Image: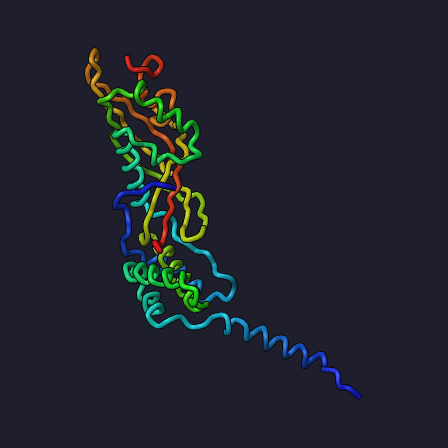
Amino acid sequence: MKTLLAGVLVVALGVGLGSAALAADATDPAPRAELYPVVDPSIAEAFIRELLRRWNDRGLDELLAEDFRDRQRLLDAFPHSVPPNARLRLLGISGVHTLAQERVEGALVSTVSATVHAQIEYEDPQQGFQRREGVGEYIFRIVRRAPR
Amino acid sequence: VPQTPRPRALLAALLLGLFALPALAAAPLPEQVQAALDGGDCAELMRLNSEYWRALEQEEAGAEVRAAAEALEHAILAQPLCGRADGELVQVRRQRGVNFFDHRNPAGLPGGGQIR
């Protein structure tokens, strides 16, 4: 994973779930119970905003997973399929859910789902201002690390 | 006549050993680490985490340093807004309207998705 959510986190809140997880560990003599909090909605929203910003800047490359289907085709499509002045605007995010979590070396990898409502807007030389909406379920991975 | 240990004595010794194991394994963490874990301050946890993982790279670092580093890392990841997050899009399932991540027509243009 090569991406950065600019300024998304490194925040020091989270006593609630975090403390609960640690408390469970401290009292459980069995192997450490891997209880981790679900992805905070603010992190999911920051990712979606960054994703749309990159779409607008034609810089999606770093935010598309290697296993994104037809990844290269999507990147290649922009010059001839997206009007140069087209902009995506976020209209809403709902239903943020953490689908799965995996603890890997030095990080917590979460697979997240969110319903995203967005709108493309651009000026057509013949037809004037155009806009089209789209709603989809976005599946993405959030990797949270404890920098070493 | 050589004495053979009685089964009960063997069982008692085994049980004692089993109970002693967790105590031996769970060595106390360094004071500043324990204080940071108790306090839960993200910035302090991150600072110590870097410190202890750096220390682990040195050959003479022992099990106590490793235990502290792992405890700090766990504490950071156990806080929902602590650490550094990166993200990547895996898939978009269209529900209605345009799928802006469909290579066939990412802008939803009429007439096949090509700019005129």
